[in-house]
Length: 322
Image (cartoon, rainbow, N blue to C red; front, side, top):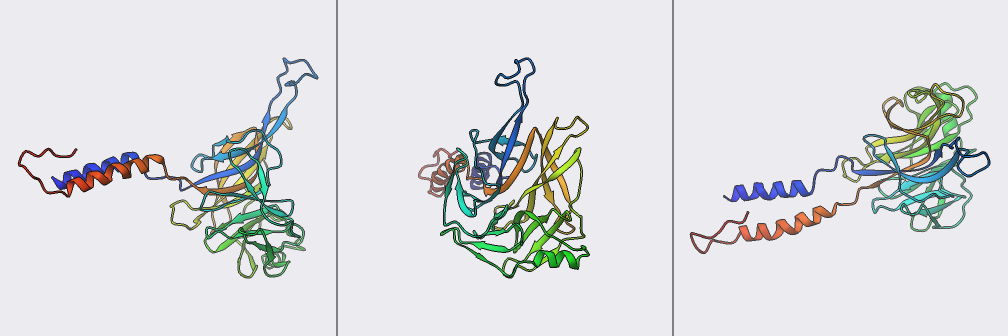
């Protein structure tokens, strides 16, 4: 009978605490195109198209994006998340904390010399970014917001030249971390770059142009990258990115599509996970999924049950729990 009780308790826990398919929530800063209504008189609100900025929550299995903040302004184009669920951003040459529910940002450190659109936080909680212009890797202490250079500028250009690029002029637009490596996309060659966080040394993943894929109309460009911990082991195993498309078979400016991509770190290519109409994305970050409240309920229920089952029976007619 004890075996039966154990099975029942296990079934209860499984029902209340289903295994998490996604071990992380993806967040993206982006813009939603709200089509105008031609029935509204010209010059009146709502006649013309409008654009609204939001923080989006993204399902990494479908790519579906849902606005979770009010309409906002000033969201960082570069985002990163930590294991405690904090959402970080890098904007105006400094570290910021982003409130996912409101989209508001709070400075969290001094203004620095490092201007970057690529930023991510490793699974161990260290921030990294890479500057525009000279592609200087820098490390950020999240407790103080202080940033310091790692290695020397020019490592990405050297890697591109080694891979065969002629007169390379690197432009790293996005940044993510997986395992012990950092990754960025060079817009000049459409290549995935791997960077060593301790030294700043760089190399091209696969071949030049490996990320130059088109799968949903006319490809517009890449935006953010982020590492994702998909199995809750405290390590980023996968690299996700946001990719944008325009004009898929329609007139100029008619449709925007914000895509979610999963990258292959063996060759630098990517597969499209999903698309969102009338959306373009900027920054991307991941953060752990909070433990469901039902798991706490299951724990509370299972504890007294397990304790009661361990007690000896006092009479032959003692009723069984469950």
